[in-house]
Length: 282
Image 1: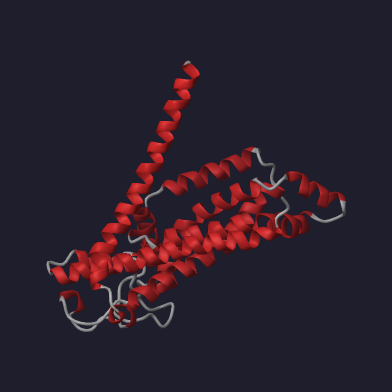
Image 2: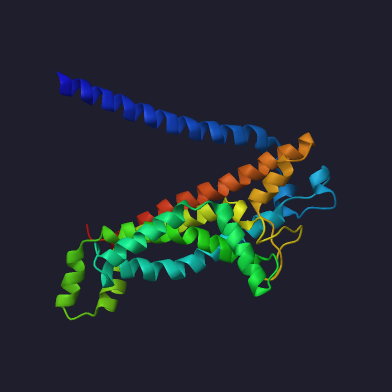
């Protein structure tokens, strides 16, 4: 009888948690749609701000859309080039439960929990030391540093799930550790690695604090890495901070665009994971 009561209570808690999470998602999406959809227009997506846009005049936020995609995309590529070798090394070249691997994972967990504004302050100080000004390059570097621990830990968990016997089998066939890592382990972990990269992209494109002092803000589309770049989170912040109701409504429309990009990245992660899953040995 006691076990049945515990099982029923656990089931109720799980269902309740699922309902709360689903309800929060519906509430957030509903609020953004309700307040942002009326202000959304092709002009807003396809044009850069004209003079006085944040005072209620014409134009759009194309500069912020391009800037966000450039910052998050560049940061994801930069982090991917650093995260993948580290994750493979933790699982192939080091013993999984060695003291060194444990220290690296513990450090990554600490870095994962560091607030994004701290990364922004560090990136700003680093840029001053290098003599750089607020630019697209500064935003890419700062966001890459912020999402790097997330990507490494996600990839580490994905690679750790690949059976270690496959690496031992490749060793028995005469393959080197490098060949086993890149031709066996990487191939098996490909769906999860793609999902980890796209999740990190979604994390990077939605952050405002890390790019506040590093990427700057401009009404123009950045044409080089040295140009300042506007981002959607900052555009939303500036629009919602104005006293003009029509500009505030545009802020919700910009939030709707950002939400759509994040949802697209999430759906793309699932699609890539499903397509790449045909290479995985079940």
